Image (cartoon, rainbow, N blue to C red; front, top):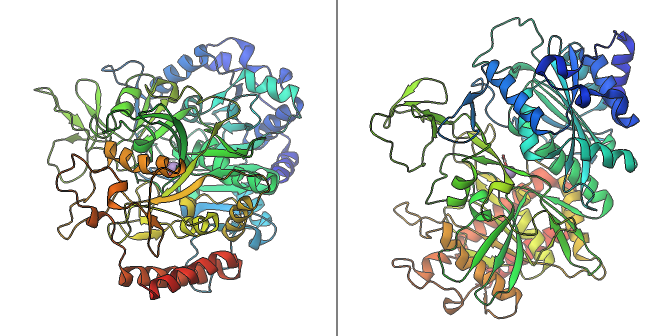
Amino acid sequence: MHAAIARLGGRRQPPLALAPLARGLGLGAAGSELGALPPSVRAFVEEGARLCRPRAIHVCDGSEAEGAALLAQLQADGLLHPLPKYDNCWLARTDPRDVARVESRTVLVTERERDAVPPSTPGAPRQLGNWMSPAALEQAVAERFPGCMEGRMLYAIPFSMGPVGSPLAKAGVQLTDSAYVVASMRIMTRVGAPVLRALADGDGSFVRCLHSVGRPLPLQEPLVSQWPCNPEKTLVAHVPDRREIVSFGSGYGGNSLLGKKCFALRIASRLARDEGWLAEHMLILGITDPEGRKKYVAAAFPSACGKTNLAMLTPAVPGWRVECVGDDIAWMKFGPDGRLRAINPETGFFGVAPGTSARTNPNAMRTVRRNTIFTNVGQSSDGGVYWEGLDEPAAPGVTFTSWLGKPWSPGDPEPCAHPNSRFCAPARQCPIMDPAWEDPEGVPIDAIIFGGRRPQGVPLVYEAFSWQHGVFVGSAMRSEATAAAEHAGKQLMHDPFAMRPFFGYNAGQYLAHWLAVGERAGARLPRLFHVNWFLRDGAGRFVWPGFGHNVRVLAWVCRRVDGEAGARPTPVGLVPRPDDLDLAGLPGVAYDDLFPVERAFWEREARDLRRYFEEQFGPDLPKEVLGELDTLEGRLRKM
Ligand code: OXD
Ligand code: MN
């Protein structure tokens, strides 16, 4: 694509309009000094400008003044509305056609299809990613990008995923015509001058991210909610070989905040494979037991399984403390001591709002009271936000406006907030951030937990018998579908390692990489577990209270790591014996309901899994993973 941009830009060679943002936003010229940029960054910005033909360019410096000017501009454009009930909080409503990640238009671009996705059975809808050829991408860029920023500002955002200067951090530069994206990237990543200095001092390499909402000015049609987007032409493309991302047509979330899913998961997972580390869809938390012993745990859950809630958990059992390192993404590398060390590459939370309340996640509620951009939540007439599950009684006389900008009343059939509405808030505002959350060396990981939303059959917690078995457990993850992408309903979806939408290369090779990590000489590997908070009884009620009580499960995990807690083997893994799990003070919660390991259920599960592996991974499934499935079936036969 880099080549594609250069070629296309080269053909036209229009004069560059390098007007400083100073003119657009009333800032000083410092942020717009193209000449002061490291040469590789400057070349990228100029290529992007030649192709997209913006009216002006602004290089983001990350300053407070820049942030304030952006917010003022977005308010003047009618795209952000102030929320006076809080401090510097804002509400955006998107065009209702641009509300979630668009997985069907998200592609990996490689010369050979097999490098991007495993060969699926002909006729089976492909689930592990979409491939596009370099030639098709070149054509897609040619159809979308020339002149796509006409009349708009091109913002160049130098950003770092991970603390600048950390051996685990990586730099990116995003070009975008969306001020909303800039304001959000300033929350989610480290932006500006320090990144440019690090690029100038280092080898100057960075991930190239090109983004446009695809609505040049003057508009051909009016915007909806002042939200520019181009849903017919949306495309989110990754070129892992060249460390490049091209995104067009969507202004929302993972489609447009390119540091997050596109870079920190898709491109980074490929870098991690090449360089021998792991880039994972995992939260990271620190947990301290009543004796003061601290551990770090990473956990992979598909979207909508309560990752943010777990990452910010308030323990329901006295004496335990949980601290948050990150809620979505973990980059993990082996340190000299053989331990896996993890950083959260982000600096903010882009969390799902509905369901977040003072009961389910008081720390998130405290985090979002300042400096937060809300998108597609409802609004209350006293200048606050509202969403399903907020659990805050409205003051008398307060009325509501839905995410569609229409009057809304409790009891209306349509929700007030979109199910994928979000808060975008600085991590530093979370009251339980771990003291080491920005440690450039990362935190040492003792356990990795996989999980899913499984109403039936899957026990509350089990431990893998070995690393290899744990890789199988991760590959076998399934969960009910989420509103974070365009899938309908509550169907059960396979989601290996919670990475299904985020693999940056062939998912079979990804499993092989995990197996290889387990073979690494001198590695002191974390223990691997699986949890399911979402079991329901015959009447459809949850059998586990969840939330703060999940610390009881984490406590067992910690004690297993310390060799202090027992377990009994079942065909699926090691589960706590009744005395190993603290259920004290939980009336109505029965051990037997929490640990269903039924032969008929698991035989069905194993059959489904075999079909899924055959259809989706074909010959690229590592034989060790298939071997673990055979072994599981063998254990089930002996039950
Ligand atoms: C997210 C997701 O938005 O996983 O974090 O979908
Ligand atoms: Mn996520």
